[in-house]
Structure formats: C-alpha cells, structure tokens
Length: 356
Ligand SMILES: Nc1ncnc2c1ncn2[C@@H]1O[C@H](COP(=O)(O)OP(=O)(O)OP(=O)(O)O)[C@@H](O)[C@H]1O
Image (cartoon, rainbow, N blue to C red; front, side, top):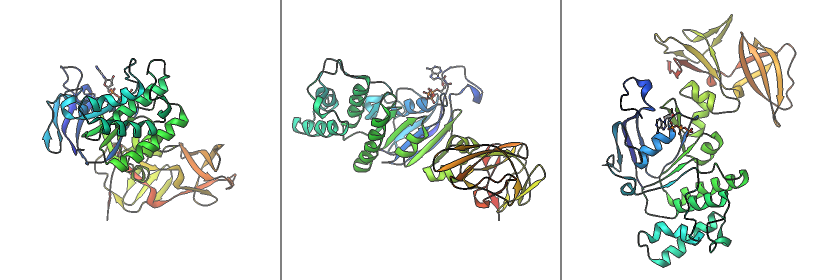
C-alpha cells in the first residue's frame, strides 16, 4: 500500500502541445493518502482515464513526476510499480478455469499453494462464483468474466494500489450494488489504496471516502461526499453532484448582499470577489424554502419523485429548481427564501470565501 504523490503532472497526447487547451490533463498536484479510497468522477473526456493510466504507468506524463511513498516511479513500468488494475471490459484467459484465472497473479509471484487456495476461495466467495471454480472461462457471460477480472485485481495482498477503470459497466444493476458494497468492505478490511474511475455519481459517492471531481482536464475538488454536497468549490461540482444539481444564477455582489434583478439577498459575510468577471450565486434545491414569505417566483412545473417533489420555477428570469417534501403544498402566489448558510458565491466559477 502506498501514499501517491502527483507532482505538477500534465499530459498532452500531441507532442506539439503549447496552450493549456492542448493538454488532456492540465496541472495536477496532489497527495493521496496511503490506504485511501478515492473515486475519480467526471463526465466523458474530462481526463479520468488519462490520470489513472499515468498512475499505473501505462502512460508517461508530458510533465511532472509521480511518487509512491516518496519514491520516484515516473520511469517505472506498470509491473515495477506493483499495482493491480481492473479495466472496463473483462481481461480473462479463456482456456483456464475460473480458479486458475484468479490464482494466476499469485502463482506468477510464487505464492505458496496453500495461500493461493485460501485467497482464491475468499475471492470466489466475494464475487459469487464459488460454484464455478472448475469451469473454463470460455463460454461464461460478459458479466461473469468481468467478475473474474475484478477478482484477479483483488487477489494479491502485497500491491501498492488497486486501480479500477469503470469496472462495473458490464455488470447488471443488482450485482453492481452488491459488488460495490463488497469493494467498500474489502477496502476497510485490507486498507489498500484504491482509485476508482467512474462517471456515475452514485458509484463514486458510495465507494469512496474522498471523491476527486474532474472537469475539462482539471481536478476541481477533492472532498468527502458531504463536502461536495455542502460546499462545492466549483460551479461544475454543484451542477454534477446532486439531483437536481445546484442552482447557479448571475448576481451582483455589494458588500454583504447579492442582487439579482430587483431582489436583494443578504449573505453571511462579504464575499471576496475582487475584480472577477463572472459572479454567480449557487444554492442547492434542498436549501430553498417555498411558501408565502420571501421573494416571488413563478412555478412552471411540479414533478413528483416519491417522498419529495421537485418544483421547477423561474426566479428573476432564471430557471430554479426547489426540492420540497411530498406533503407540502405549492401556493399559487409562491415565494421563496434561501437558507443563508447554504448560499455560495462563485467568481469565475470558483467558490470564494467571505470577509469577517
Ligand atoms: N490516445 C489518445 N490520443 C489522443 N487523444 C486522446 C487519447 N486518449 C484520450 N484522448 C483525449 O484526451 C481527453 C481525455 O480523455 P480520457 O479518456 O482521459 O477521458 P475520460 O474522462 O476517461 O473519458 P471517458 O469517461 O469517456 O473514458 C479526451 O479529449 C480524449 O479525446
């Protein structure tokens, strides 16, 4: 298990890259704790796989260095970095039995046979393939083969880290849930450093202690699921995490208040917006109170989502989503108030602190 240091890493797939926009991965400079469970979350094309492949050694970064426990591994191959990887699609030896597929990484490293038997039995149980140990992998479903790939990634107990690249894509929804919970349990028991790439927020939030949110080749926030929800550091995090995402609207900030149209919204302090171009106010739909008091809104639609309702409204010309409990009535002349401590002010998309 290892602490992973990413030092001023950048990557461009073209050798001629110059401008920031030419880089698939803009500068990444972070330390990831030994034994942490991290999820790399972001939309397609934001650079998740690029970063994962740099950590694994499949890709050499254009700039920067990577250290495991303080040792520079930038020039080392995947094998020499001593990590296990699970990819999106199954990598299985068809002619071998399920058991031998799982035993392969251990036998390859001359682990004593008794230990091989014990570890493989444990993993077979976990991936629910105990009854198929003697079957050849050939002819198994894609789902079963992916479970073997997953098992092979987990079978060694001496790796520096385990990296997963969207490993549950081909697994059916119920099994996905089971495997995700088991991975989390395994992480708690084993203390492996795990990095898990996904574009699915549920997957990221249930698996990881820390979620690394990526957007347009950058890490925009690393935080616990609660931090991402309560204090998104970038408007993208607000929008991407949560359903519906955070409301973001352009405002003018004057001292300790924000103005939108003819409405003045008092803030908890004076935001340090400096000379930024674009100033926005962010508030999650869960922290807007809907009733007969406050600022007027126009309700356009009410969607029932079980125990809650999503009210789609227009506020000062801006679209606004509000989450209300199922039994709350939606008044005809609806008005809203914002929970003050849940308001974030964003300057050029980044959250700013307040003075005083
Ligand atoms: N081998 C390559 N050559 C050139 N460009 C590439 C290569 N691999 C990825 N890219 C580009 O780099 C950017 C980041 O891609 P990457 O695969 O890292 O994103 P991702 O977040 O993992 O996306 P996905 O979820 O779709 O896998 C994208 O614009 C992609 O088109």
